[in-house]
Image 1: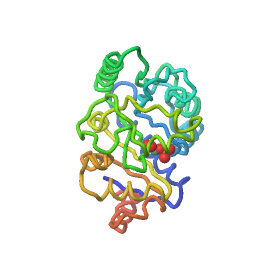
Image 2: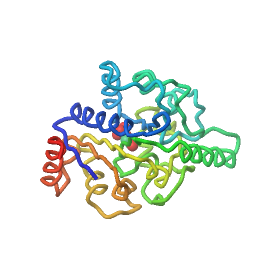
Image 3: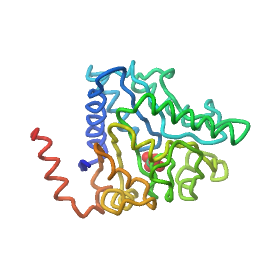
Image 4: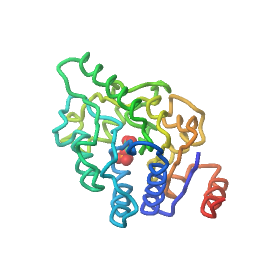
Length: 262
Ligand code: PGA
């Protein structure tokens, strides 16, 4: 695991954008495949990717994207669906064609239908193989909507949202009652299949979750701790999100080594 600690959120976005672009470049055959996340944190990263496109350092016109998750019960055209959010905040920003954006389908007339859609989505990810998976982290340590207690080998499925997550996301809806209770989310096993993971966290609200994910035991109690199992996990933080890390000096030494190409 590489832990990169930036001076502030803007620098963190730049570090993360480099990790994403470098990771996509390593694909040998076929078009690159990017795993994408919603939430407030990746917005700075998406803005940096757009700058890279502007400079001619990146081009997402032939990139395929798979979203981490979607709410159950919202159609893909709903304003707060993650599909619409990603069209607005990702596709339109970095020039990734909407036709290349895949999102789980959380809408259907029966639970059985939604389960089948989730299984098909997982199979499509296995088939495509994600080169770089972008991740945020919840204050409770979730990645995607894999809430604490999620199986470390889970696949894409329906998952109940925790009370904490619904409260954290109520700001996007007309109050807590309007927040869906369930999601379809890539599982932790699905996420682990990606070739590189880039997790970004900023702000002091994430410090405890980051300390548990990076330095705590591998545990379903902190789903993000599965990063410890991945051979190419990059964790990009600002100072506030890094505040709970005990092994800080080592991360800084390692990052300095990377800068000098060692
Ligand atoms: P945030 O969400 O970036 O809006 O804090 C992160 C998450 O819940 O995964």
